[in-house]
Length: 274
Image (cartoon, rainbow, N blue to C red; front, side):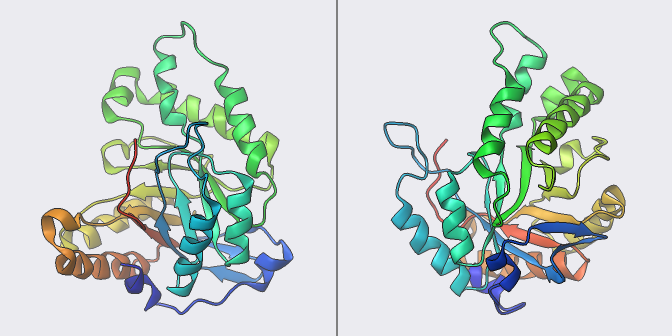
C-alpha cells in the first residue's frame, strides 16, 4: 500500500517544517514556504481508547508507525475521527509528516434537528482547535467527515452549509493561519462550500475509467482551490492483497495525474474501532 505512493516521489524531510513554517494555499496546491507539498498520505485510526477515553494513549506505537510512514515516502497522515493530542503532532514533526486533524462536526449535526440538551458545539470545536493551534506539523483542520446524505436531504443543504460555515469561522478565530476543509463524498457533492481553503473528497471507485472521468468533475467543484482525495482504497479482505495493490497503484497515480494536490490511502493499519 504505502510503497505505491512512495514510488511517485521519494521523501525529503522539509527544512521548513523543522523551522516551523506553516502550510498555505497557493492556487491549486499547498506550499510550505517556497516548497510545494505533495500530500502523499495515509489515514490512521480509529483505535480502541483506553479507560480514560484516549485513543492515542501509546505514543511509542505512534512513534514507530510514523517512522515507518516517513521511511515509505509519506508526507502526511490523516486522523479522521478524533482530534489528536499535541504530542502526536510533535511526533509527526520529528518525522517530517503533516497531519490532517478531524474535528468531527458530523457527530453533532443531529442537533440541528433536535436542539434539546444540545452541547455548546462551538465551544467543543474551540477546545479541539486549541489543542493543535499553531503547530507546524498541522496540515489542516477537517471540520467533519461525510455528513450522511439522508441527514443533508432531510435538513436541506442550506442549513448544513451554514452549520459548516459557522464552525469554519470558529476555527479561524482560534487559529487564523490554519487551513480548513470539510471531507465530502460524491453523495453530497452538491453542498456549496466556497469558504473552505481546500476541497477534500472520499472517493471509492473500483473502475479506473470511472475515477479518471470523475476527477475533472471534482476539479470543477473545487475551482481554483487545491483538491485532495482524502480517502481512496480497496478492501483486501474481499478482493485480496494483490488486487488491492494493483487498484491502489492506479487510484493514486490517477489522482496526481489529474492535478490533485494529494491523496490519502485508507488505511495504514487494519485496526478499526468505532
